[in-house]
Image 1: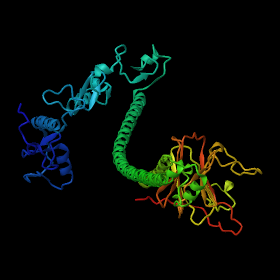
Image 2: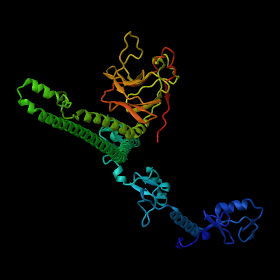
Image 3: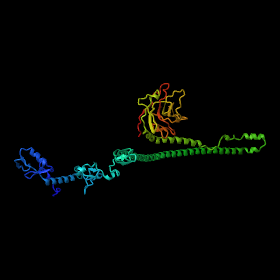
Image 4: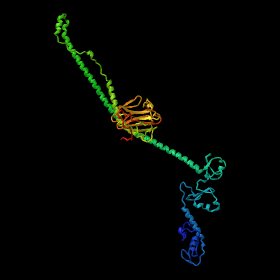
Length: 514
């Protein structure tokens, strides 16, 4: 029998439907058509003629089945169908029957333990005995998917034994065990894996966060080292200048002492010389016994030279203790000023990044404070910073207060605003600025203090106050253990007898300094 694999589609096409022959038949003139096509064609025509050669038939011809062409067309259809089927890709189930190039399986048979492509599946769709076989979606390694005891598909999961079972298993050894479909348990396990994957990603992000912190720390360390070198150089210049000034001061004092000693010695030597001459003059008279002669002769002598009462002159070495102390005090003040100039702007810029949107509680507000309706807010961790405008006020108190204080003081004797009572504040009163510690600490008051910054670090137990305009630190209180929340504390102070302290304390937005 001839093979159809070397023929083209045109050799097996019906000239009416232009498709591959289906049940081909031949007309008396020798042309071939699909049986359905030529039957329909003649049903619609008034005359019976060949669609190809137009040969006219007086009566409707009896068509003849073309057995050879039917077989060749079937072979051609099979070959075309095989060519059109996709080859198996990685991860897909291959056809177990294909030889040579394996095609993709479309079904697996649980009776035959075989997977089939479209072509090799055809007998299961045609043969009566094979039609009863159970076909499922393509599966690889079918023997491993079957219960070795019951020869049935493992399609359930026993959660007690943590193993895959078939339907018959649930009626035997696993009767009382909870079982679920494989898909459901698969989804549970996949969710667990996804959770693990999420935990892995979370930890990777934490590693990245730690590395970023280390990198940031390195940059901060380099910046601090550079700043430290700059600050140390400036401070060393201050110390060197102080040493030069101190040396000059001591040398000057020493020279003054030497000059004074020289003058005293010269004066003493002069008096010794004068006294020696006087002694020579009166020496001859010292041997006379005649009282009259002695007195008359002594009267004729010159008056004795003036002399100082040297018992009243102290010859003590100079003291340099006060000189050193005074000079060291001046050095300390200079160094503190230099430190504030060097460290203040950078430190203020660092803490300003912790700005918080501070709102106040109207229920605990001072009668002279006007509070908006934004609610209230406290802080219980981390770091926070806010700024308060104090310009034009002669009296005020501000800082932070603990959560458990009596925020509306009603006692006759008010509780001191000190850290021991959970208050960390600075106060201005009668041109005196103090930190309310125990005892109070007097602070330098710079002219033109307009805005005060307040910074809190919970972990460090630190509260710092800054002169924002001058960009210097006013005072830092550290070493405290904060309990509960901290709340901003603002007290505008009393109006005074003439109402001269009527300006408001204003919580203002933070403008980052350059």
